[in-house]
Length: 312
Image 1 (cartoon, rainbow, N blue to C red):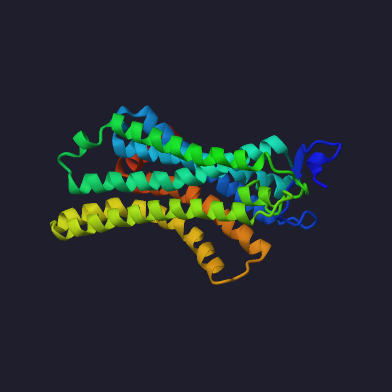
Image 2 (image 1 turned 135 degrees about the vertical axis):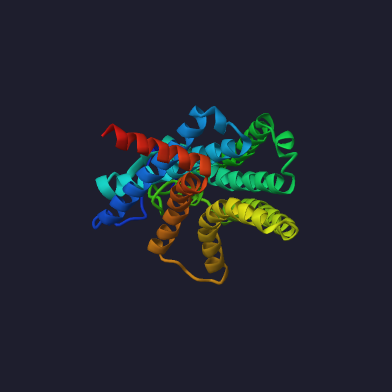
């Protein structure tokens, strides 16, 4: 009998994924430190870019957007996992679970979209340096970014429309936070059909974004061959930051997809590890990459540090 047919209405879920008796507290501490560093780094980027009018340029607006996405993405699931590991809070309300599922989907989709639009920005900047600011104005970048947020939100909104009508047969989530897979496994229906639909959407997003990024790199590399050595150095430095972020986001996803494709059955702990790496890895790396490898932001940080030393 489904829980929703029972006398008590479904009000919460029990979070699984971790051993509630022998919680890996050390993992929780590491996750907490990593989460705080990731959020702090992203906030620093946002504050610097918003407060400095000289940084109100297309590339920095996209870096600011990526920082917002990083905070959204890592905050969608990490606090829940930290609460389970450090405080033993292993329940989440039904409504909160649905919200977390949607926000996590929105964040993961926007991570891919953000890196894709940044690849497009670098492509135009390198191939058409003189026309760059006329092709990609702040207004056009903002409009394009809003469109991507709307598209990503439409993907996210389809999840509760799928899950809410389904009856639930168990309160226990298989994984450590509310993603679509764990919530669907609590229902009384065969989730395979919904998993296939989700896999199709994920394949479309991965294929579209990753292929577009690769094609952008191919176009840039072709152009680099025709450029001088000095220009090649500048272009290479510009691309390295973006390439690091792309690797951090896509590598865990592809590793999981390849292992699954070849029939490798992952344990719950291994799956959890990949999930944590996929969420925390990009959110930690992205802000520090753009802090340390973007000259204007790096100079601003060093300027603040020098003032702090003089004040002592």
